[in-house]
Length: 627
Image (cartoon, rainbow, N blue to C red; front, top):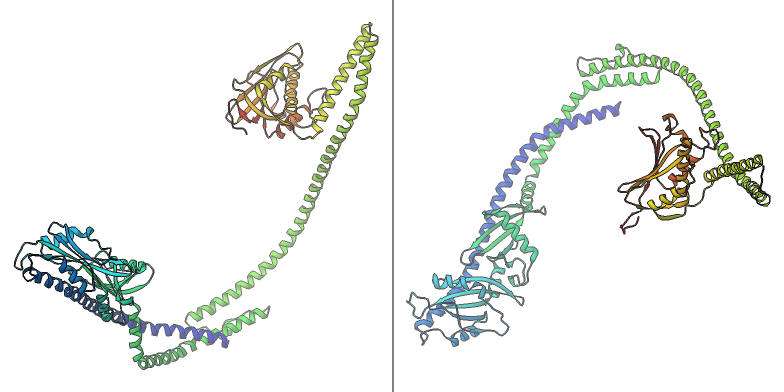
């Protein structure tokens, strides 16, 4: 019982702990959310300030270089000793300033007049010529263009308008300069903060500089970083700073600032978990306050749990004792005085327990009665099993008879094989007697005819028995169906009262069959048709060609086949004739089955029966695809 009480007490404590802690957690969660938003805004403001400062550094560096060239061009208008800047001037400027790798002087139409360049320079301004002319010639402003990466160095394209005199408004030429950005990289490297990641991109998205880059410049293309910056740009849209949830699941705080003259962009980023780290640090400073709150909550929960659990434990203990006694003692029946029944849910539980005990007693009695009924049913079932056993024995006896018939059939095949030899001797002896001394007496001639007819009938019976019992491998050959059936019909020995006609489909097909076996099957059908008409009538042999199968049918003008006999006539040894083995149609079905064909029989409305054999077409006439 102590274990049960402990479980109940622990669950109550857990429930009270949840109830007590839930408001505290909700308030704390709300406070943390507010602090999180405040910290996030402060951090983004700090990042935007850093981005603006770095943008100022970039603007100052580029402005200083631009101012240098503007002063140079101004000095060489009225004070250069000649009306326009010349080749010697730009050679001198390039030699004295190692940052310059190439200088070109263009007229106001964009045609190059002369240039000064390092031997290793591969500088080209052709793709930006229109922008240069628009900014310098049309607007009279300095131009800062693209950034190129050549041989592991970064170079910036700049252009400045040229005038013949200092006060002239008309632009007479353009000075185009390619400069190495190494000094700019050093300045950026010094201005990057250590706790933030900073990257600078050009107007076309090319990476110029980033934190940790050698010399402060992206001297080699960093495709993963460039792709990350493009994702930042798309996620920010028109904002200058925000918390971004990237597709890879990473959350970051990103701010950016634009460098107006150059249209460069400065990105400042740090992980979003910085906020959580700051919140944790601030929380640890007030750890004692948290511990005091926890201790007060624990004391409240323990005291409340004790006073709430005690009125529940005592009735439950008495209920448990009654349940154990009901399990161990067969004749025990709990009463109300054995339990404590308060006026609450525990009391309802006790009343339900008493009712359940009574129901169990009633069901036990009903179960005993059911067991007695089941015993009677078992006896009846045993009798039924005995009956089914007898039926199974009868079926087994029938199966044994079937196997005996199969053995008899095999023995009949052997005996038929042995009888054919004496019949051949008798036939030969009869033929020899007729040859040596032809009979003249009419009775003797009739007897010889009877002998020959009976020998022929016996051989026919033996052939049917052997044809049904014999199992040999099929000898397949490809035959033209119309020619095959035409020859078969011509060679069939029909009596004088029987007329044989053929209705072959004009489209002849090729079959791959055992010619002899199928020939015997068709001859058996024709023979049965002749016998069904009792020697008078027409037997039709025809074909119908389909897409994949061909139908070979034999039709007669006899009385037809009764529906009750349509399945039996194909059974071995079944016959309706006075004489015969009943194997003719069994041989036909066997042959069709070995060729994987189908066989059907139906009666014609005009009288007579039709036997149909369906076989798969091997090849049609003119078709080169076999099979």
